[in-house]
Amino acid sequence: MPLRYDRLVAWYAAHTGANVRSAYVPGATTPSPDAELDWQTRDAASAYSAPVDMVAYTRLGPHLTALRTDVTLAARADRTAKTLVPAAVTSIDITKKAIDGPNTSPTTVSVTDQMRVLAAAAAFDALKGDFASTEAHPCGSPVGLVYTYAVTFRWPAHTLVVDPGQALCGVGRGLTLDGSHLPQTLQDDSELDNALRAAIDGSER
Image (cartoon, rainbow, N blue to C red; front, side, top):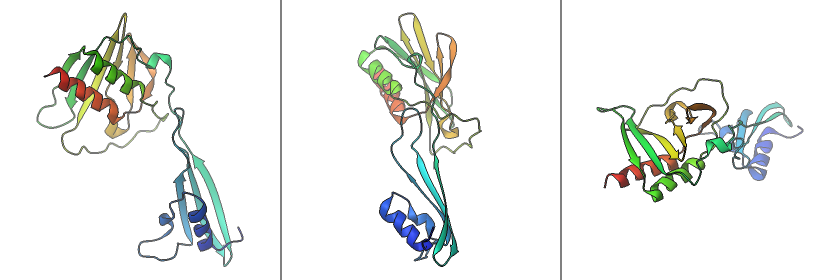
């Protein structure tokens, strides 16, 4: 491109959502002659992650800069009808377990209060499909006492078992419908954990 690299960075700063800070080394007032810029172009969809634009540039001459541009996104598992909970759900069983600490024994609570059951079902149905990946994820370390929540939804003639996954390892929630394991996994979300925690708290009062 017939443009000086610092003016190129300025153009991206003015016309895109690029994070141009990545073009500056700490303490510098001008961008580096070789760097990468990236930014999220729009919100995530149900079928894929939010697309991210990436631009790598390198100085070739006083007024010449080489560019490479890429867009990355990740496919998600489909939320098919089998992965959703119907309005006919009558009860849920919630298993709460600490992943570390002095007591890691699981405890299970059954909930039939329809307001809490439907709130948990709505939070579950709002989960997005997990990202399609065949690579192992490194696991993060818990901060304080962290609990996981598995839940079983029950409605006439059916059960849907939702395992807790391993959020710290990037492993989504697995699903088992009427004893058959479904191929989809779901990305974890704090909203479901909050609804399950509220259902447990309400049942213990």
